Length: 54
Image 1 (cartoon, one colour):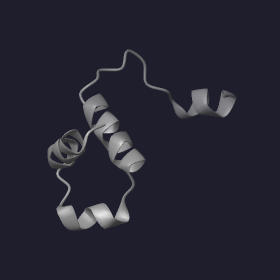
Image 2 (cartoon, rainbow, N blue to C red; image 1 turned 90 degrees about the vertical axis):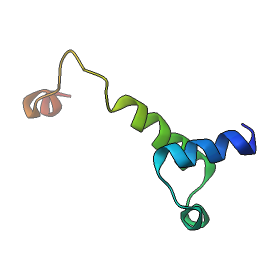
Image 3 (cartoon, one colour; image 1 turned 60 degrees about the horizontal axis):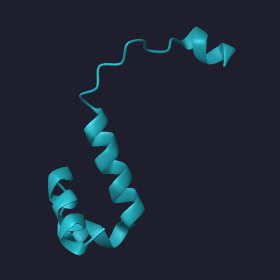
Image 4 (spheres, rainbow, N blue to C red; image 1 turned 180 degrees about the horizontal axis):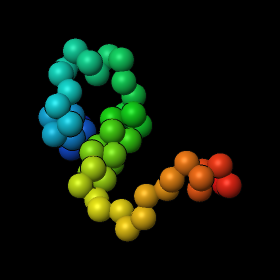
């Protein structure tokens, strides 16, 4: 990952430059991936019963 790409992802997530002292590159990548998954329409959402069986 290049520095410009990393900074672009930070802007897309909405991070301020001062917050980068508290985060790692991996955390920013995880936040970006999760942000991308927000619009995904999951075909089945787990219930509490399913989680208990798991």
